[in-house]
Length: 385
Image 1 (cartoon, rainbow, N blue to C red):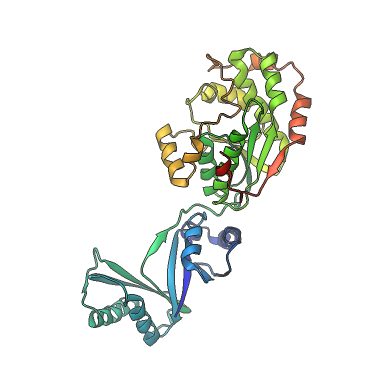
Image 2: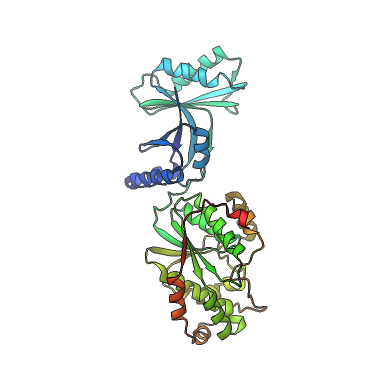
């Protein structure tokens, strides 16, 4: 009897002709997440099997892999009645339970006993060897038996986070700030299969090293769900100061956001979308009018995963994915340090164009040419905050 991890695909099984593409991408992502573990992975169209010396630790890491419906610590035995019976007894011998039921899936139709009949065979075996009763509605333990080329026996299933394997939908660029919303937006994009890099606008001395380290920490948390994230740090000081010298204060944030989108669009043509954490109406730059005017500088689609969520809903997700405690640390990013008292909520495009008469093209090029790339998140940046 061999202890291993059994993976259930869930939504991936609906992909028909593209199923193998999704499964292969999932396998590649699992290898990235488990790069520090010694594992052997075997996959087919309905299940994936992972052999490792530490199934508990590895299975906990798999809880952050998108594309998994269920994660099971299972026991593999030969597909014959005697071996299955002995394995069931071995699995249950140290368990405390008063009621149980048996659920058999007979994928291998060459196995001579049908599923319902085999439920009765194993149920009788358990009743004979343990002081317990059958309860098909609310049992203490469910004995799952999957009869395939080999047979897999397990008691509990951990629910995976679902979604699509990261990268199956191509590349997106997440505008990552130190706030609550943008990390949640990044998580939601990852869940739908978008491979993301993160873009952070650094404006020292107006923003602190703690603000930068905070964002690095957030990118590292998101990377636990991806294994493939890069953080692109844009030196934004000179351009930001030029905006505040040349633009009326009520239009500062609008023009600043337009410059950010120009930079995002200029970085790399591999990105198919820009992703951000804007929620409709939450601040002045997130009204529909503001979004329209700001978007006009780019031909990239803008994906706003949290656009229709309220703040409490976003906070709930942030807590679930592990970004909330870092996001609320009191270090301001470049969008918050110079917020005017009365920012325009319905900006006019013609006014924006008029205010952008200063020389910004060379400053944008300077920003892009001097981007710092961070792709190693092993350092504990929390110690620096």
